[in-house]
Each structure stands twice: as C-alpha cells, then as structure tokens.
Length: 277
Image 1 (cartoon, one colour):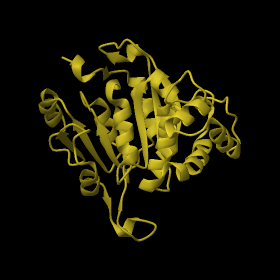
Image 2 (image 1 turned 45 degrees about the horizontal axis):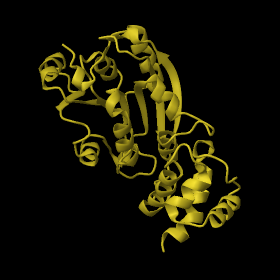
Image 3 (image 1 turned 90 degrees about the horizontal axis):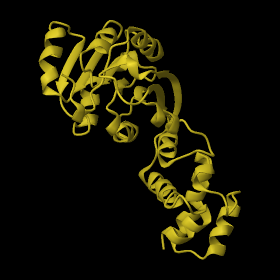
Image 4 (image 1 turned 30 degrees about the horizontal axis):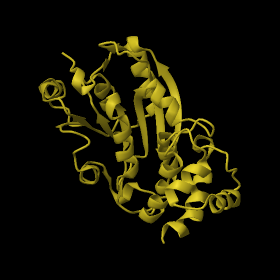
C-alpha cells in the first residue's frame, strides 16, 4: 500500500508515461538517475531506452518488488536510500562516468539526466540539491505539484524566492499538466511535468552568497517595497538605498516579485560593497 507519510502517489496512466518518455528523449547513450521508482513502471520504460538507469527508492518495502522485477537486468541498479542523505557527487561520479573516448573534449566526464516523480513535500530541497551539487544533471524532467511548477517558471511580476533560486541556476519550462486521476491513490492536487536545464557556467561560492543575500533581503517582507526591505536588511539610509536602486534601473516603490534575475545580479554587486563593512 502507498505510504502517505512518504508522499507516495504512483503514476499509472500509460498515456502520461508515454509523454514523459517523449519529453525526456532518452537515447542508448544516456545515463539516467530516477528518484522514487515506486512500482517501477517508468523505470521499465527508461531501461528500454537508456544506457544505464540508477533508481533511488527510500521505501524498503518497495525494494524487494523492484529487485525482483529487474533481476538479471544489467541496465538497472536499485538503491535503497534517501536522496537527500546520499553522497550525490560520489554516486554521480561512480555511476555516470563517460570515458574520454566518448566525449567531445577528450576528457572523462560525469553526465546524466534526472527523471523523477518526486514527493511534493520535498520538491524544493531536491531541486536545490541537484542545482548546487558538484555534478549537476544535464537536465531534470520532474513531476511536481502544478502550483509549484507554475511558481518555478514564473516571470517578473509573479516571481518568488523559489522561481529566482531555480532560474538563477537553470532554464525552466512547464511541459504539460497531469490530472490527479492519473495517480493511485488520487492526490488532492493536479500535477505538471517540468524540465529544468542547468546553465553551463558554474557559479562561484562568493557570487552565490552575494546573490542570495540580496534576494532574501528583498523578499524579507511581502507587504513592503523593495526599498524598505533592503534598507532594513542592510541597515542603510533610505536615500542611499534608493540611489542604489536607481543605479540598477529600478524604482524604490517596486516589489521583489517584479524583478528579473539580471536585476538581482545588478543589486547583488551594488549592495555587496556595503555588506562587506
């Protein structure tokens, strides 16, 4: 039986499974990491196309059935573990290493795709884990709560910390909606499939720290303007804060949800000099 405390809702709609596979575009050269295989229906389809599939399942009660289902299938590896506790860089470098002879640069690489129907209550921690890890996936194709998917792909005017956090690291798009009836047991909300593609350039730790310091300050109070939030967070005079906002091409009466990623980057640089003192 599905376990409510683990957020288990098993996908059983064949048409949705086909659309996931079409969206993931898996080839026989792809390494795939799957989170929460559940009954293994998607795992089976992935294994029929991919070079290798590693599936991480936290529920020990499901492991026996999964191991039985894929016994003798050398393309599938089932691991009983918590994705938020596992050593992800070690796993990725150990399971998804591409030999130098198969890369364009002639160097050994770690390359994989993440495919997952993730428990909705840990959506944000999982996405953050894979965006910030040493070896991020080439792309993530994730089934998430529809409302969360809409927040992730939001544009300036409707941005949230979640949207800013994801779009800072990656490009995100909503692929299609999935009706609640496609799952067993039927959840209380509809779902959506999203694609998240990490950007090629890796962020420096100091740059990330500056960026998220300003973002958290800007979103610190939803009811206040950007100017008020930044003034109080950085202990700055209102006039000085407004001057910095003007230098970034922003109005003091704007609110955090209206800003683009580039706006936040400009502010991070402008406020960084003050923040060092």
